[in-house]
Amino acid sequence: MLNILDIPFTPLDVAGILTIIFLGIALFLKIQRIKQLRLEVDKLNKSLEGMDEQSKLIIRTDMELNKIQEELDKKITSLYTLQELTRAISTTLEEPQIFKRIEVERLKEIGFEKALIFLYSEKDSRFNLYLNIGYVSEDVGIVKAFIEANGSQFLNLIKIQKTISSTSAVEGFIAKETINSLFTVSAFIFSVLLPKDGDKGFLFVGTENKDTLITEGDEELVTILTNQLGQSLENARLFEKTWNVQQELEKKVEERTRELALVIEGIKKISKRKTDFVSSVSHELRTPLTSIKGYAAILLAGKLGEVPLGVRERLEKINRHSDELVHMVNDMLDISRIESGREVMKIEPYDLKIISARAADLLSAQLKDKQIELSIDIPVNASEVLIDVNQIERVFINIVGNAIKFTPVAGKIFIRAVSIGAWIQVDIADTGSGIPEEAREAIFEEFYRVDSLINQQVKGTGLGLALVKNIIEAHGGKIWVKSKLGAGATFSFTLPVK
Ligand code: ADP
Image (tube, rainbow, N blue to C red; front, side):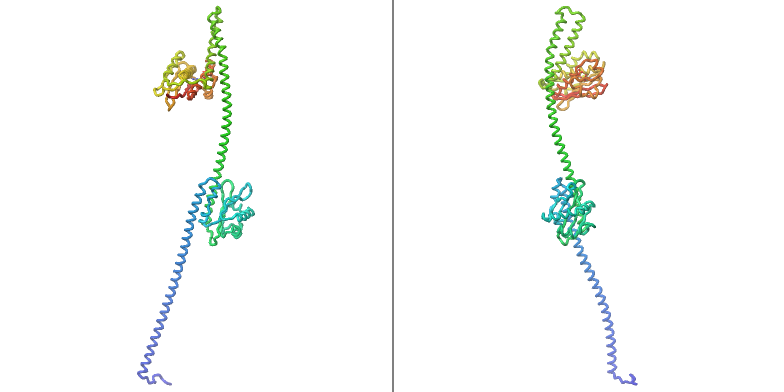
């Protein structure tokens, strides 16, 4: 067997062998290096792949963000439009105007080009059309017939008060495809219209745009719109109701006013007849009264012979009663003359202090008899009036005369005056019996006398205050009384200032 050591190697062979060995080692190292490089390349490739994924993710996120931004922009525009729409429909109180204010342009801004409003009339048991945007009448006819045919479904929608759309249909409700084809849309929303009173119904909005996908936000938006519509309808109906009631009331007031005018006319006629009657009767009474008084005077004077004492007493009574009658007849005549305007007031500027003093002087005997103290307080700024002096003097004498009559011994009477704008108010107060509440207006009527003990004892006709009232009113003033039963009365009247 041949041993390798037995082979004779030349130095050249050895060098060759060494070279081969060296090259082998170098090759091995190279291969190792390549392997390492490959691993690194793999690593690099892997990280590059990872980077690709990230950039894809970034691009995707960016796109999504853009989409969200777009949607947000759309929402903001829609919200603006909704705000304008709600403002437009809430600023009218006329029902037809509310629907007219939903304009096609605004509707488009919130993504729809078709809209219908139907309200269900309980009275006619049918749906009536109140708004049509985007449909020709023929199509509306078809839609209306469909709604009528499926009335219970739509009524149920109103009942459950739901907003539904092509993405959120209610179970049991008409299929979305049917609605799409009948209403010629690709996406839609139904939202109910629920005013508190009167007809309720729904708003339908739709679009033919195939890219439109109704979101919850869209439903909310349309619901806000229908809520506002319902509120506006409610307001308009309430306003109409109030307006109708007001019209009716006005009509009634007019009617009543006309009736009242007729009644007043009648009263005026009766009053004139009464005045004429009183006036003619009074005139007729005056003549026989004058002759009675005349004959009594002749008899009393003894011109027809001696008058026995008993007869004289009776004749004097006839004379006194005749005087009272004449007085009464004169008062009646005065009242009817002033009432009918036949008695013209002779107006002149005058001082109330003078009139009060004169009345006090004229009544001084009665005041003294009953030890009644009369105090007068008329300041300078409340004394100049524009009056018929004689008539106003009668007013003072009548009221102060009454005060004396109805005030017990040692009582007090006050005459005061105060200036109130273009008027002077005179108050004549006493500490007498007072006047019951129920009689405070009636005492100014003719012949009215309070049914009291004093009135049974003191004489009177019940004409004095009626005359006083007529005189004050003929001056444009007013008269009234305040009193506390048992604690006196205050008569107040107004007179024009100079
Ligand atoms: P007469 O005094 O002749 O009865 P008047 O018209 O002057 O008629 O008065 C009507 C009624 O008003 C009187 O009968 C009396 O009952 C009541 N009256 C008037 N003045 C007073 C007064 N100062 N105090 C209480 N009652 C009065």
